[in-house]
Length: 353
Image (cartoon, rainbow, N blue to C red; front, side, top):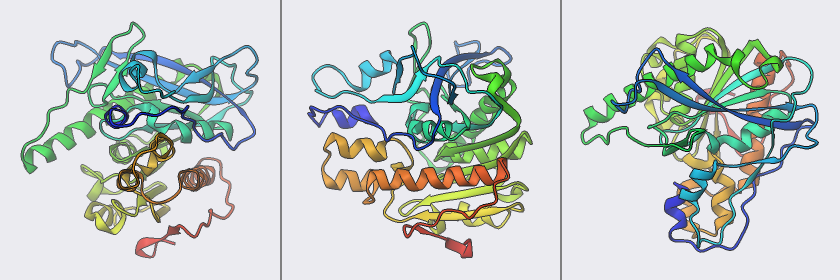
């Protein structure tokens, strides 16, 4: 996504992500996981499914640790080749910083179809600064690029559908693969960096687009996930009619989600636990990614910005999202029963307020 837009834009600026709002410093570490129980579902000659995950967590100290880059070096060379005059963001997470004492709720993040785990960095960092451990997941060959520790870069290999029936089958396959990926990550949480800081009795999941559908699919299949959140993703698979009996938040954009999507109205009617349905005025589908703040910094034309991330200001959009995501998981993983955030840009379709 970013590489395509950069070919048309010559910038001379350093891109920045919003600073986390919590009191804790943020540590981060990357892990390579290999599921030897199954081959890669997209590439026939790969005998095992390999995943990359990144852990974001409250840190005890950041002294002596460097800030992590937004993307890995190999991917940076692809999305920002020489000559753009652009500097990609540096995150607010410090590589390998020691975790803060205590055991903290765990959140899994799954990105949109075709996107990388890094697309949710601004949210992940903020949650970590407020005492959550966030595990962001790459789904290789579904994502545009995933770089492994040995320098290999897995590119997108999922087929391009040519008919509605093929598209429906592809989406179901993508969902099935992602649910299996995520459940494998759940199995391996104790092996990840910062594992001693994780409270595995308090696990939630959220995601953007297909990542939101994945959160719902994982909740249906695995009761280890106690609360879930879909950010502007159409629901896919059996969860639409089976529903969920645990807390779930549907967070839609003005241009994609909400009552315009019949999978939302069907799923809403089958949610049996605490349920929430909100819509962010002025937002578009990619508002729920880091691109909400990065695209305006690049200097894209106004029509391209409006089409991709809407008319809402980037900092305002991110602030609202951070407040709602944190409040939802505070309520349902920490038992903090305070009032939910109220912003004039937030509406409650279907009488959901």
